[in-house]
Length: 90
Image (cartoon, rainbow, N blue to C red; front, side, top):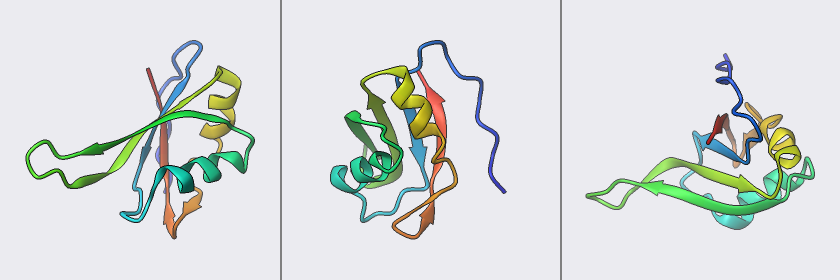
């Protein structure tokens, strides 16, 4: 089942996104959030320090907290065939 999200930080602008497909790119993630009119400001994908391999997760920053709220509603929705795990980040 879907994991409960942590407590939202005040004026949150950033979301953690996990369980991402290895085929993900900035464009696909930006379009995913555009479905709920959450305009993305910046994306940072996480990679293993030693190997450089993609960890399947990252952070998405939004222009305002309203967009961040909208983006959070996509928690558990499918992107490239995988249910995305979303949580608040600061």
